Image (cartoon, rainbow, N blue to C red):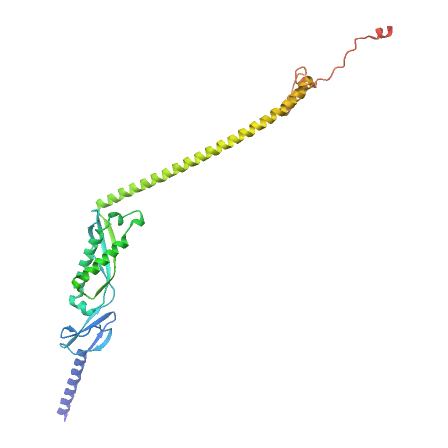
Length: 312
């Protein structure tokens, strides 16, 4: 009984182990961020990708599951020298963002390394072609409006897409963005850039100075015109005042001409008033004009005598 029981236990244990092994061969799990492809005798059994999660398949060698990373990935082209349309040398480093859209067709490339090699080659060629279509000023310029990076990146994206669909092939890859990550200049190009920047700044400075000189000339001419206008107006007003004063003076002179003594007396008073306004202590001779008007009046002497009056 013990031997039979042991045999049964061994048999049951073997069946359980076989079931576990078979279950492990049939059950698969696709991790998050990846999609799966079920291969039946090495060929995809369906066009639809297998979503992340557990599933059941026939055991190998009938079926097997390949998981492919479906997340957005970055690939960078090496920093390399490229010639522009005007034969200027620049150092350009570009990148692209890509993801797998069809794992079945993607597996035809063999591996991620093969896909990255294909994308590297496509990006390198697109970089050379796109940069070679534009002049140096489109990459390096003091005027931001002259830069054409968006145009260059769009051209690179179109070239990469054309390479991936060459000969009607579809690798199940989607490139969502292509851009320039780094730009450098050789020593020769750097010197040329600085020389051009100096020339542009000197030209700009000269233009500003010329504009300032023209504005200064306009302001000077306007000021001269306003000055001449003001002077002409002032001369006219002065002439009018002088004419009016001469008229009034002529009338006064006519009055004074009728009495010369009065005129002389008024002149002396005016001179004396001016002298008294300038000094507080004055020593003067009353015999000299205009101080003679300050001399007290002398009563006239009568030539007749009392004796003569009495005799009369």
